[in-house]
Image 1 (cartoon, rainbow, N blue to C red):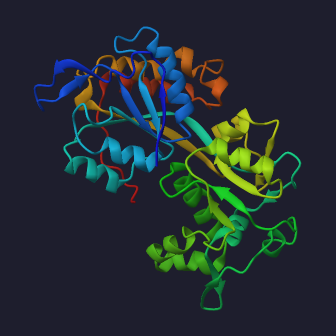
Image 2 (image 1 turned 90 degrees about the vertical axis):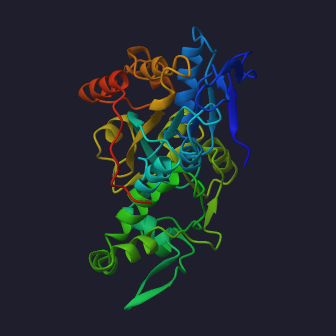
Image 3 (image 1 turned 180 degrees about the horizontal axis):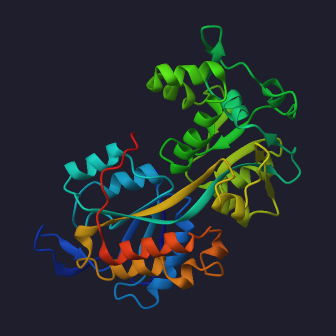
Length: 353
């Protein structure tokens, strides 16, 4: 997969300078390099544009390759051939953290940058949907309970799942396995929906690994369609197929409100307010991860992080709000700013792969 790359400076092609990196013997970069989540990509790009106006190395290079792909590149090692920053629409997992350590990336700084929601949406002229969270599992899981076991999911319309829903065919376009949006959808939507079903709640209590395998395995019969890392492409697909649904980040709904509309989940519509207060079931936090070993080596890296958390970016009327960012609460923002100053490394996360 070829990542989308934003080079917002005329000098961006000159990625390496003539300076030497004494530790590795490789040529050091003067340009900050950030990779990761397609959901966080528009925010990081906007910060890069603002920061780059006065940055010594020009505007940072920002690539969208999905949360998983970005963290994998970030964890590949230390030095100018590896990114300084990974953006993520879910927390780093324990397995990713251990792979970083194995490759010498020992000190990682985790900064929460804001909130986002995952929306299930359709075209403006499509059907209205008020989905129960269990409808997501019952409509999209590869297997559903039957008797003492499971069978292949045979539902073909949303009315098969819930008689109160549309008779439209189940056809959902969503992100691929490398996407943090997909990871969050599986956890916040599919797992939470599965737990509403007594047989699966009992399975979770007796065998959590088996429960997760069942809840997180999406259909492969054409009712769920992997659609790449570009959430805008999913939005465009919905305008061409108004009976279909799509799964993507709230910011893309915000930017395309004239062409797509959201379904409610358990009676709650996604909005800045319901995502920030957690009442919308598919709300999540977004992060950037910084390689502490690159602080003081890649020029301006710590200042770039501070710009991300600045009033100009993070205020309710800041430039990231214009892109759909749901800002942190004041106390949380103060805590993240303190981290950006101290660069205190994170501890090993408890979240497994």
